[in-house]
Length: 469
Image (cartoon, rainbow, N blue to C red; front, top):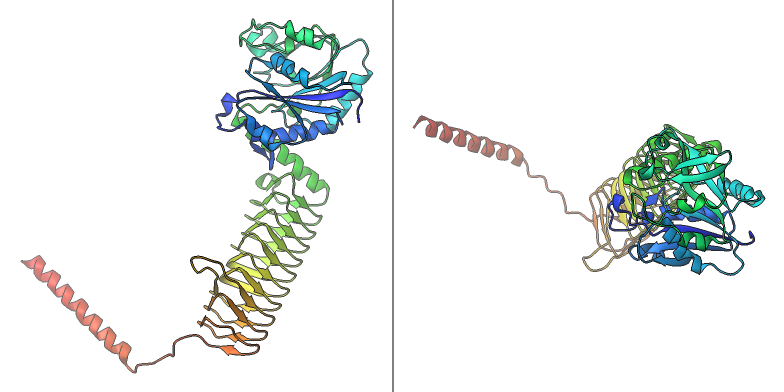
């Protein structure tokens, strides 16, 4: 644990440009809230304390995040005021703070670690300012410096024409010595274009040194939904690049979406249009996609999943799914199972080697080993009030277009004739036929056709007579 360091995260802004009913810090980046990315990065500093300064308008972040201390900024009067609101929450033994905005999700823990080493080693200074160069500095505070030291930071709205040409900008991230900081903050005025108390007004008074970031992207702030989309693209590139370095193949990585909690093993191929979401885990040698969603699922090795959606399911090894399958929550699929095109399956255990090749719905069921479910089969699990189970034991063959009315058990090795409606249990090794007896009426189809032809001719004649009159 780092001695004497606290992190203060400023999260009290109104987020007006985001135009959202909820705090912008709760909006997702690769499956994690914006503020969650910041908390993840600063945790690498091992601070004694982490304080989040929030406004009375964004209590949703207080309800969501645990393990931090909270300080209220009653009114959004600027960054200096926000830090003043956070200082009373500091515990004993704190002599330095790291200050960061809650909407800066791209800063890396490695960068923060290196900057903290520099801050500790610096002598004769009470601030370390993180900066970066950019070709488009619009909207950022400009850094006016003398060598490695900061003379002042000028917010964009207050810059002169000459200062607007400066390309080194302020990140809004600082390591600050606590000594006399509160007094300096209280001395800050609000005589500027925004009418706010700028924290940057303090920096020039504190012998601030510069720590320049190598990558401007790390200081990107999220002020609009356009910024959010830009940050998402950056994070996606980081995730897919790391996965490729770890042995995963992407066919056009920019065309897939991977959330930060997902894990994919080597020799798996991700095809375009694929989404791997939540805490999904995908094994080795799989083929995922194209156009596939794997959401909070566990998949084993050597699986093929194409043009399908899977949600909160557990998949074994060598499973083939798709195209156009919908695997719904609480489904468990064991090894060597095949789910073919247009199959929907929900809350069902499918045991090893079973096949549901196409056009079927199976819900609230248990399917035994090496069962074959014919095309168009439906388990009727809902009676309008309750869900009921269907048990199909090992080795059963269900003929196409069958309907199984739950609750029902079909015994081991049984056959169900195609087109049957099964309303009762089927014993082991029996053949169940649940359909009406076929009757062939000799020549009846010919009589039907003659009647239809005569009716058609009469209707045509009537229309012609009406037209003639």
